[in-house]
Length: 132
Length: 132
Length: 132
Length: 132
Image 1 (cartoon, each protein chain N blue to C red):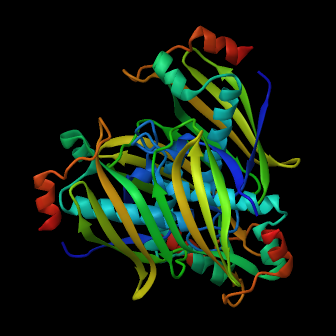
Image 2: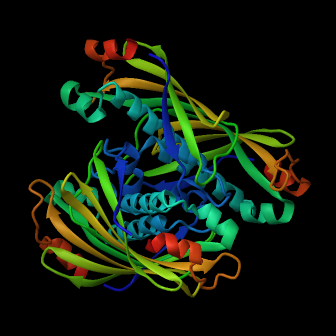
Image 3: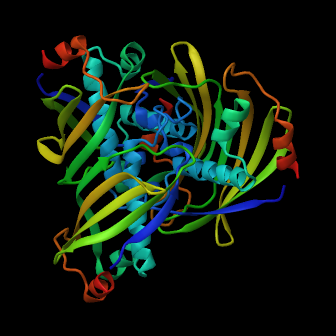
């Protein structure tokens, strides 16, 4: 699946007293973009949980902070599914402003059953969507 | 100036363990919408500060919580300039989902000089924009 | 029940590009203090929900912002139960730094059954604790 | 410098609709603990900036999420200075509940001049404190 790009505006709530976007808020930007990427493919987490008892659990997050973003900036965030396991996926993401990369991130996600919390294989329909 | 409407998607970060949008996060939704309302009129807070040393300071906020919003909801938020003083304004806002009102809010804002922190009259250009 | 006071340290996450605590974050400070006030009386919300299916729902919040708080400040927040109805309560709170009041707030809370979402009377044990 | 431990209570604001602490909020918990660790040694970031024009910039953050934390939990967070360079440091941290490790993290921080944004060596007084 090709790169997905999502624009996010920087508001006051995202910044800190250093005058830049607080480093924890990129974690939110990254998740918003992953949710919109799924939604673009017709997938919503609430529906995955209801239909398959499937939840996505963040296992590892690595963020490299290269340059800061500021109030009123529009940043663009990508999603790239770089690895798809039986009950896991690795997603790489980038935050940029114009052509400038501000942040890169790698997110390892486990697919887990919401009831017994054990690993759960990706349903074939979802697999098809994610690998198309 | 007529009502302005801004859509906001509810993400995981906005919800709490009660399964609904956390009440503090509506405060963020309301501010995002006010900033977009200003932006739509060509006004950005960073530019107001640089050009006029003018900052907007929240003086009072009243929120009525009527019904909850949930993960994956799209809510629509309005901005209505209900009162415009010399160095202050009162804005009323509504958060709704479809036709259902979830929240109403009144926000009193002071216009303050960023250097001496004293009340500052709205610049004529800005006044014109806000009352057109 | 007399005033309860809770200290909160201001961290980077609480501030914004204006160099002050973001106005939405006082809403969090106020709630943290209410939860600690209840906890001091042996009440935890998770236990109220399990034992009585009782949840506290914020109905109205009014905050007056008087002066800003800054990074590294310690602010002190009070809780005063100003009105106790059958299935509701009104709490007044103050945020101060040293002797200086930064914020005052009034919070109207409904007591609701977590299953049918209808108003639920305060259990006698809880009433006793809250009015002692 | 030996391990520092800081307790943090989980509030509603920290949780999400999954009923657990939202993964972005651990980033805040980690930073709060680093700031308290510095403060315990008499160092405050506001003072470092005023006195030395020195700011701490997060360059890389890796978090491993092992188990979730829940509303009303008390978690304990450690800080261990695992590497100290000329103008950088690497800190390892752990979040635990009782004896159970919930999260581990590695944070790479650059020391930067607040004016020209170039790398700045740790002042000798600070170095002494950090390595004592």
